[in-house]
Length: 238
Image 1 (cartoon, one colour):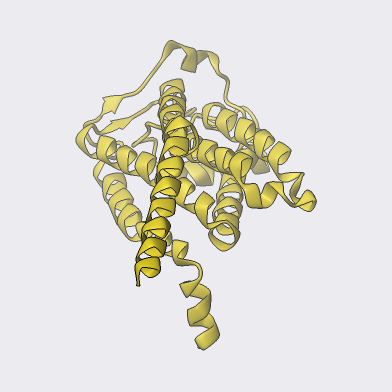
Image 2 (cartoon, helix red, strand yellow):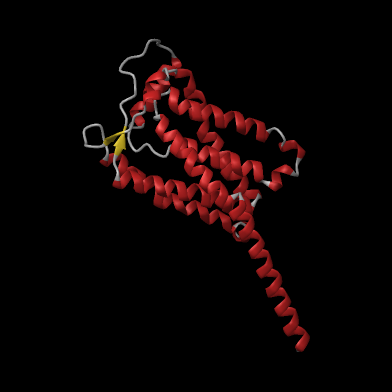
């Protein structure tokens, strides 16, 4: 028991997982509220009609769950600072997504009525369609969270210092591209959802990994040095 307590004591970033208690109930609520039979705003762009359905993209789409699980588990266990940045990135976007879906119910009508082929991938896609409604779309969380994971892996110093993790970044890039494309070719999202995910991710990149993050880190470092200087001065006076 003591070992377990010490484990969590040294990894306080695991508390970030508590966000699930907010996200999951809220998401279930909007999924039940915004349905095919309810009134919602149709999301559509002309380019959506030019993108063909391709069931084989269900593979990278499902790999998103593995990608997310691996990235979150790694930073939570081995890189505290990266887990904080990733947490801020993900939770900001996911909360904004929930708010948008609540105040602006939305959905699309892009899914095919029938399938040209009959194979395993079509069957998996049909199960996906049955479990996930074509509502509550933007920004695409599949795309936005994938970008957050990729940015985190690119800036993860703990991973960069270990050669045996060198394969992770190129694989992450391949997964990011595949997952992004899968949301369109499976007709899970409109191009609008993908574009809004990229726009929001670009803003949050500046906050979590770019100039804003660097400025915050420098300010924190200066405060720490100042605090240590004051403490040392007090000890010297004593």
